[in-house]
Length: 131
Image (cartoon, rainbow, N blue to C red; front, side):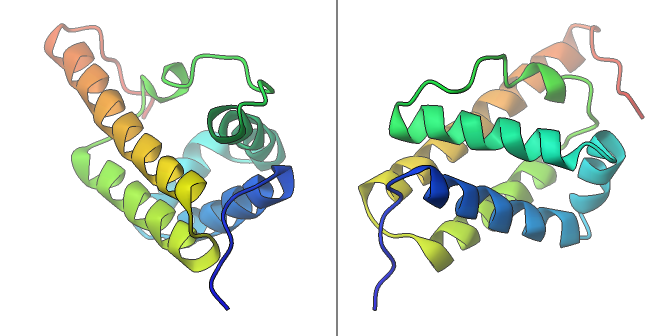
């Protein structure tokens, strides 16, 4: 049986939980996430449920500025590439359809936008990495 599309909050939670399980186990980006989030995983996951529910299901449960928590992290293009690989793999495993396709497209655009903003901060001297 083919995977179904993302349809509700439970699907969002499955996507986020499975994705961040992969992230935490990943040798490249796992340590960055662990150093930044440490013991605050439940709070982070809750924010990510709300973020993706707002973006994909138009249910306005998230408010905030998603770039700002990333602004001082020592992120490089390879970190974003791995993030997208893990996100795409999670989508491919669990979901198929227009909403899953939208999730993939939005994640890709977000990665490009975050990288551009980080590069701008680095070039203009206002980038001070956390670690």
